[in-house]
Image (cartoon, rainbow, N blue to C red):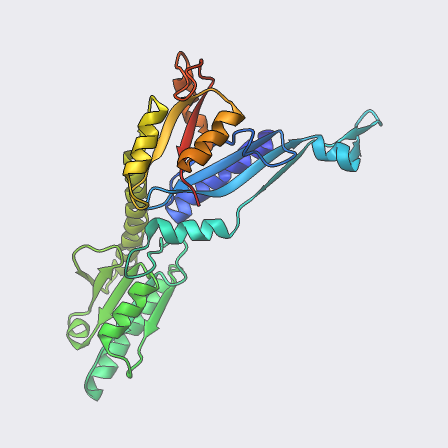
Length: 315
């Protein structure tokens, strides 16, 4: 069980630190539990429309599968004993969460930690005598960034207009774009734009260049996580009655739903009714919220609550 819990916490850290996706860590209800498991742990992410996406699970299997398949080990006593097992993993759901958590109508928005291209340098010149000046500064910038393991790409294509290049890399979600033309080369600097928006700015290509770029990438990573955390916080609503949740779901749109945290008495029949009635499911019993259940009445049955349950519509 400890291994299963450790793995779900590892996935939660991976999601937040590398993908900038905050998640709710919890335990699945018995009806949502992996078949044959004693306990299923999950991380649930909130997409921009308020829908939930399960992005990783970890199952404590107990000795159930060991009994079914007669899987044993020799203990220190020399006796054969049934193994205790766990099973855990993430898959393409996490890639879907990455796309739906941050992207906009223009295209992908990728956190620098996982972006295949972290910085793209777009070269611009009109005259042949400008080309050498631009290429020399671009070469310096690229070498400096590569020396610090920045994933950088230089676009020096001459058959595509700069505006088309900008749109291409915005669509691909490249975190930081640098533009170097003759004027920039003359000043020894690059003109920069962040994929997540904000004022454009110039960075001198001097001794502090690499540190400034790395700082910008760290800032983009942090800004994406903070924006997603704020959304999750603002769109997680504590409800006291089922009617309150149902009305909120029915009055909302498919792009403006929330997570709903409610005191709950575990009952699979009531859970199934809610699922059919308003299309919301128990995503998990959040580990950090269970203290709230003490002294509460179930928001649906009115019985003494034994859990805090997180409800949402989900992919």
